[in-house]
Image (cartoon, rainbow, N blue to C red; front, top):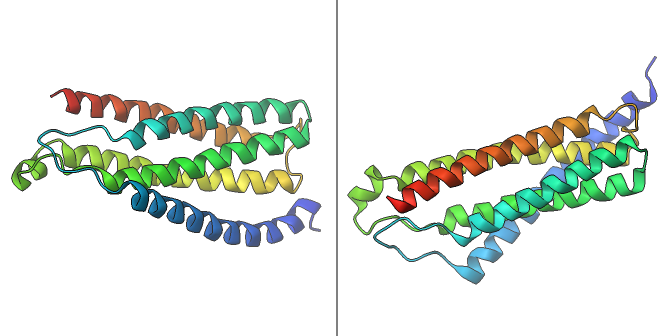
Length: 190
């Protein structure tokens, strides 16, 4: 016999699919809008840290705070505030991916000389950032599932493992992003 959650999960899977499409469209639209407004960086002799990477670092930190807040709120059974904190964290995740996507598109070519660009640190930095952004898309999808599940009354003070998992994934990617920024800064100084 199916329990209540099994029946909800079928409907939730449909909503997750539609929400994923909507999320992708919003992220892409916002990234294209940023590209239209700000354009690309002009080529330079040295690799430059794009402003978008600094902005996304702030988004990552703020989203992390909201996820920790959500985890604390669900433990205290404050459902309305818990859901609002999850929505805010999800909003910052979408903003992170949008601005990060723009940053990857807009990043300068590192060097005026194509040979130096291919063999220099530029390609390595872009690759690290792109791989991180792809992992963040997975974390964003986990957060989307957790948020939709929260609105389907999945989590309470006794069961909130999904929220904990999403927060740990987010925090782990935040640590990786700090490492990437350190590598980027070393490349910038070199």
